[in-house]
Length: 468
Image 1 (cartoon, rainbow, N blue to C red):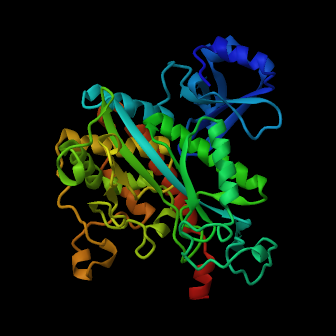
Image 2 (spheres, rainbow, N blue to C red):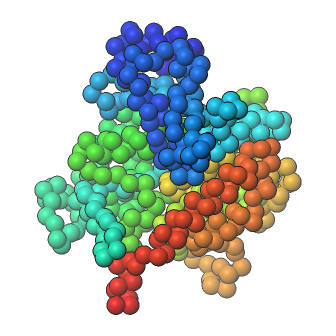
Image 3 (cartoon, rainbow, N blue to C red):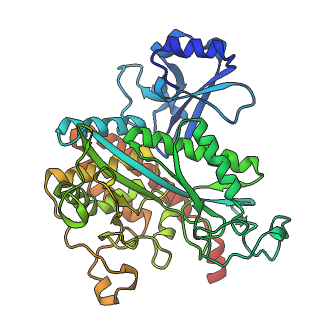
């Protein structure tokens, strides 16, 4: 859809008998929120004055005495919702403070927009392109709960051997070995048709899927979406998560972007591919290592320098660090390399300058893309502006290095607590150009501390096994 004015939207609503207009936005944690409005209540003032909501009801936002906030629809994001039974239009919104009329500083999408503006303002590039490859699990069922006297989780997939359940679908499947599902074909891959439906739903809302396939773990999948500008790519990741969960639900299943839901199986990452362009030309291609320009190597150097602070944004859950452990293909060691998937920063093999990029393999899909994307950009721009050398490339298998050699290589954070402490100490690169500010960073850290403390105070089933 290509709406150029509110009048275009209102005409579309009338001509297509749209019953509801849904205004959506993302909070600091990355959760999607919506306000459903009857189409009869949507008019020109909706777009000029916005839609009011209570900011005090969201964690990490506003105190109750300053709770009024305004949603401003971004017309370029309007799309038909493929899951509503009645014709429904959905629009992504930015958030402003009604007192000042300015963009709310804690609005994650506003951060992403400021990052794009900052890059353009430097004169180094005018576009940042990001391509995302979110991985996720789909379970036949997922049950979990915590109360003072009980804690449990129980997930099951018909691709697993289950001792306590018999699934009709399992009777039709072929056996899949543990961590043996990468690029599996039907009938071992029980999710191929479901992913095709996800791809069709994404296409209907103008998100271009380049590929989808079964991932390494049983019940694990990946959908790779075509690169787009930073804000648009972040929008599309949020749309993808919504589509995946709703299509899985239509199959009587449950999808999760939790990084490590299953012990001893590979976890889910969200590899991110970055490139900078200026005057419609790629500027990451050159004659240095792996066909990169010096500027791209400096960008990589900045990301490597700030990777532990970035972990707080790109790996924002305690569960993230159950994925970032040796032995499950997760990039624990902070190296850069060409075509080497054991490195945290990889330069994929390409056939043209237009596709030259750097892939960062440490992020996971629990990340809020509106914060993780700008975080990586600001680290990379710090690398460019200060010409940070990324050091020697590591073209050997980092998983198989001798212990003494491994100890010489820096690692990503080992816990969310380490990550937020690193962010607290190393935050200045994020604040350049006013992209992030101390108020947002402090609020984010407080939210994450609450998560950590909530979990640390609760006995887990594993602790009963070890200590009861």
